Length: 215
Image (cartoon, rainbow, N blue to C red; front, side, top):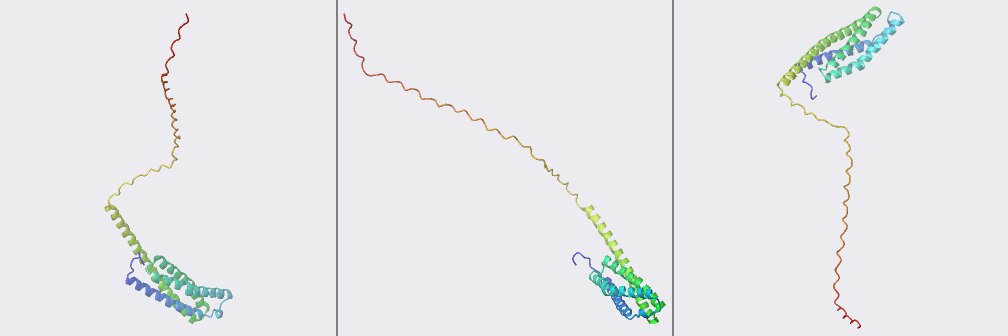
């Protein structure tokens, strides 16, 4: 997958061997549990019911939960959370199967006890190997984190100083409204000058002669 570190061949080989061991033990346990005849055990009804409930719980885990976890690890061999999840499941299987083995040894046939004991030993060995692998993976992840931190510090020390960031001042206040400009006063219209009166031309008619005064 992109961005995922390569997994070494030895790590994958170790995981595949471990998962094959778990699968083989799971198949054997599934078969041995199916052949139990708990109803014939020499004990009380409450103990038999508890044993039957434990068998049912283990069988569901072997058929559903365990194969899914194994498949997840096949896809991501060095996934620490997936490895830890399988380890916790193996731990739970060991506890429940261990109680069933004790009951089989106390109340059941010797063959049943021996078969379940072998299954319990197989799960115990796988659980121990898972714990060791989990510790190795966690240590490798821690070393990788330390290495990345060291490289980051070196990169920061050799990087040129960053230019100071420019401050951008944003004025989000409403702009002050300016008073509307007054219309310039209308210029007074200069009254039009009346044209000068045209002088009347002198009359050309001769004045009448003066009449003689009577004596």
